[in-house]
Image (tube, rainbow over all chains, first blue to last red; front, side, top):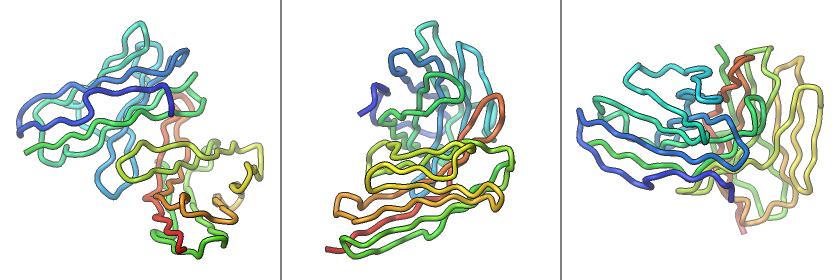
Length: 112
Length: 113
């Protein structure tokens, strides 16, 4: 198992609500990437944070936003939830930008 | 942008036989190619990765080959065991500054006893 943790493990929300997901990176890792994995599909890149700054973004709307803290833990915020946001949200931490990414267990979000 | 295609979507092999999964990518600037194994309800786990300055890498029963000219890379698992049953994903790096991973659609590997 990696040292990457995520909370909560499961979450149920209704359409239009807002959600915050949390990720603790592995000790010594300064880069966190977030991915969305719909059922039966490969993960899709949302964005990456490096030393508290956003360092690249995938094809996701602005209602997906994030934050990285001085201890390199990170949050993913999603506003105005839609049914299609139901997915497994994975964070991955790495020692630096171009290093191997190690994944947390994910947060499974269900939007009703 | 980068696009990664993975084949086959499902692969069923007899225990003890070899399994090969293939991926192609579109961005010639990609230089990092990891393979992840994901069991049902679990996190993706890195099983092997290769960088573009290397053509092949082995780790016990698992090997990855990379052909940069043809823009394809493959995962080889020898002497398959029941615990190898899972979904396998290939990925390719995209973007020089942020190194996001672009993933294939996955291959469900079934090991028949």
